[in-house]
Length: 235
Length: 269
Image 1 (cartoon, one colour):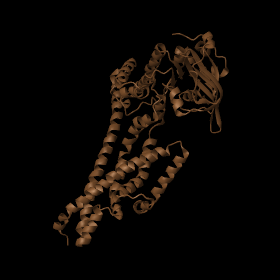
Image 2: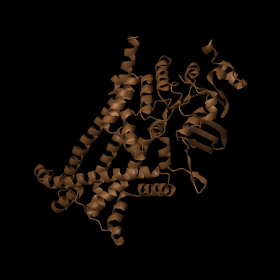
Image 3: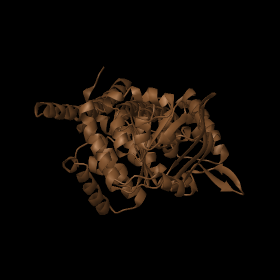
Image 4: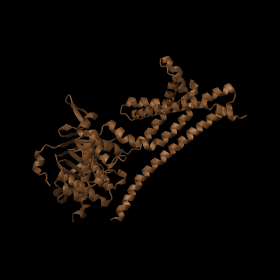
């Protein structure tokens, strides 16, 4: 039934498709991050119509299936004169869909910044852009890195949906191998193992960064404790 | 220390003018018809029970809270408004940024930037707001940190400092911008009692050396009496009485002032 030779012989083909999977994940995540930040900032805007428009877009995208969005971008956009390659349509769809989740993550990070940080920025008369880039974001991002990492992995595992718009990523490649050779077991097992080998280390990496961030915060608290004790004993 | 005499109080054009200020939170009116001046270089101490509106007045000047009524003028310019075709309209952000450059504020909770070293905390606005080079900003930052006795902490992060030290950095960060008026909003209230002294000492130094006006909201009565040219007593969103410290502390005219001060009487005997 199971043939090691076959399982190994199809690896080059699958690894080629893996490159597409990884590319789609990374580019899609960049799109999701940029769009997600954009939504977050629009939702905080004082311009009411912009705010409501963005809230509506985010709710709409989040409440409809990614697959439908992919079909829409790839098959319906051309009727409006926007024709995209499968890859562009794919990363746009992935990015757009996940941006609506990431905007919530960014919001959590930004909301966790104490009001005093904004007030101190006003008192120092920093410009709006400097407040965001120098004061708020550098503090908002580190604590949400684990959540971002989690969405990165979820998105990675969602890339097989891209096969629906004719992108030959890993699952599609396995499908092709299977239908040509009738050996689906090896093909899909290989794909499963590759996914595992990629996403598990990735999740370990994010856990590690999470611990390091925690560690850093602990350190600063500990340092102040150490100093207090130091003062107490030297009085 | 120079004390503003009553005569000059009358003759000099005030630097800050609050006119007919009112404040509503929803339907609750917390402040009404406040008129209040601060002269150039004048050190004003504001005392009164919590919730009397002292902090709100300071926050209005720092453009953190917009008065629902009235106008504030600073250095002859309207703060929250501008004139268009003879009418008052709300000022835009550009105008606010232009005018509030004259104002500095130190907060109860220090509000240092926790992700920046002490040195960078003091440099940041110099570079991005005053447009100084990094070199100039660093020189000035080191100089002022030395003045508040923290030059050895330049590379530390705020969380590694005691509350008193953090508050001294916050003052250095505000003073280095050379504002014309500094607001101190209960800057010692969050501190352990044994750390209050070091912070008051820095304020005293700034008050003695610097030309800038000061609005000091405080519960440290002895300190207020010591450094202020004028003491203002507020209660229930109103200025009840004001005058030179000797007058307010020794001969308060109003019953409310007397009641309030009697709680601190041990400090004076």
